[in-house]
Length: 352
Image 1 (cartoon, one colour):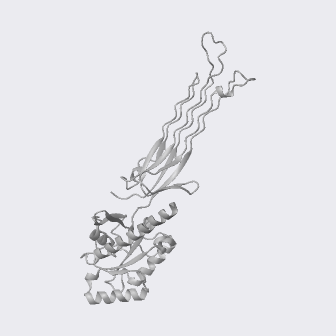
Image 2: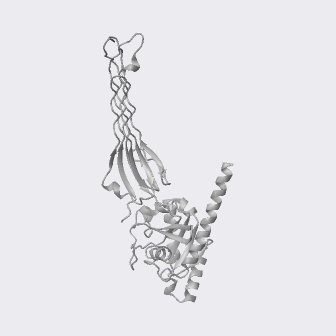
Image 3: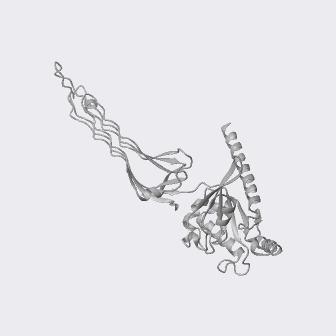
């Protein structure tokens, strides 16, 4: 199923029920007094994160969500029944924004997270609340308050530990096929990947991580060129980026862009979209070594690394032949384990 990672919906909370004007009428009690009950509160609209969902496609067909109205109050001091809440399930990783104010209302990052997006109206007061020594038969009640009405933008940011990025045809889809059970489309033309793919890399029992492949980036992606711009958001939650580069066409490179220029171009696009992406750990993966002799591939890789002045880890692989891919996954797993351990220690220190 094609990933749908943006949707706009309308949420309407229930109005509160009206208060009742009523008087007690019973035999032998001629002056029973006011006994109108309060109206019930309107139902609210909640978003709940569900790990079993991975797309916002359902919101293409249903865009308006209403909660139930509260019932009106009744005589004999009977309160109206409150309206039922409306629960909307969304994928884990959904960011919720108020369209009118551009305010981010919440970010649902864990299974079961709940977010109130439209509060139900409060029920009106019945006339029993308005009796006093000087007003023993009040004919006053208040109407229920209206429920909140909002237009929301839902934006899905995939929760992946590792993100793959690179120019079209750098071999990202082949790489994720080599290291996980994901089966993205692979072909010998640009922009084969049209939407993000997720794969789970299982190193051993109870040791695994999620890797995401997004459509290839090109110069000007942050300004809307190509297909990858709208998916750059999926890299924002990752802990590590693997930057794939095709080293085989040393003269000209992809569409006339050399491997070094490809790296620099993508760094510029990351900086334009979100400078925080450039601050993330980013390892260089020089791919398609199988298209060159071994000595030539190593020499080309060394030249690229030297020209870039690359200081972070780098690797020479053939994703198609699965040569050198698994050692990278082992190092990634070790890197993520260290991060998680450091985070756990920081939480323990904060709790003390």
